[in-house]
Length: 36
Image (cartoon, rainbow, N blue to C red; front, top):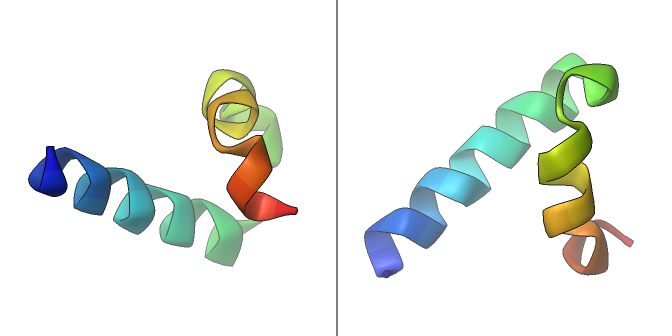
């Protein structure tokens, strides 16, 4: 599960850098608790 979580974190970092929130509706909801 650690590898899976690392992939999620890396993906979220790229998303934040690109500010492409419209492309990640499900991901945003999935990690909404961590992004606040």
